[in-house]
Length: 234
Image 1 (tube, rainbow, N blue to C red):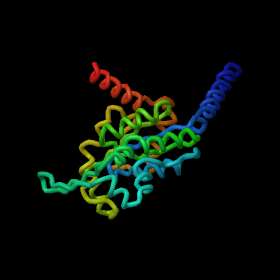
Image 2: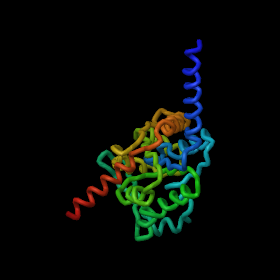
Image 3: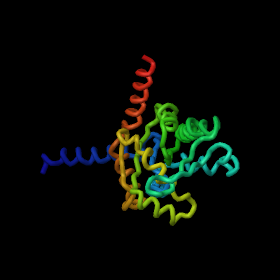
Image 4: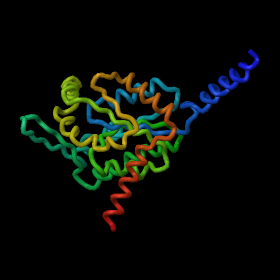
């Protein structure tokens, strides 16, 4: 029995140390959720906030949309509608002018950085369908811990959700799906929301964060961008 005492004390010390340096004692970090419209990003973000004791703020595409009066959105962005070969409606939202590009490239990313620098964890829901928007995150959030999470959902479920919500144009997710997950090699974590609930996704994300203090996904993406830039200038 005497031989076991130091062993037991060691276990207790290790458990106490793990608790001391667990997720609740981390510096502020960003959870970057990427997926199409109706993939469950906002629901997952709210579930993460419910299941953690940390100070969390939400940012990204939805917050930016709320900040824009409808008349300004129409001035800065355009929605194009087309019909694919199968007869399905496909909708794309694209910047009309320099202000639209600025909102994509830097405004939203600077807001996320400000929240993090003020000491908050940030959950940014995004539709990273082009390099302009992605580069904004790799450049402006350099030096901040970022967990890059891809939220997948099959098209049938996405369009069913669009119909149920009633506040999203039918065809928006279809237009985003071919391009939004082009960043999949850089995801720290990928989840399928087709059947998983927001709470299940939130728990997997929080568990991953707890066991992964140093995510590498966005750093790999930043390195890839830097390498392509170097090749272009050589």
